[in-house]
Length: 128
Image (cartoon, rainbow, N blue to C red; front, side, top):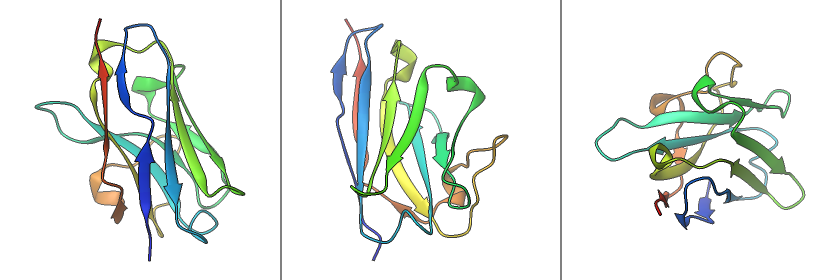
């Protein structure tokens, strides 16, 4: 069973930083690609980062490069998404997701259809 549970969201001021965590059930990180996706109000869900099941490296969507950093702690069965220089446009529900087959590319971190298993999502609100 694949379980993903996000935490760390909340209200943040513009320019601030935030780190989201995703607790993942045992044995998943070794074999599954883990993605971070978000859905802003009125917009489609979009991928922002992924950690490849093939090489364990993180890739980031062009739209967030330089501000978003995905990482993992295999020992703790956690993945993280650090967000710096938060902007109002980053307000969204953030999801971690997993898939056994999607490899995670530098050119494409995956969208909703690439991921099979999902966390419940967590709200990030950027506002002064």
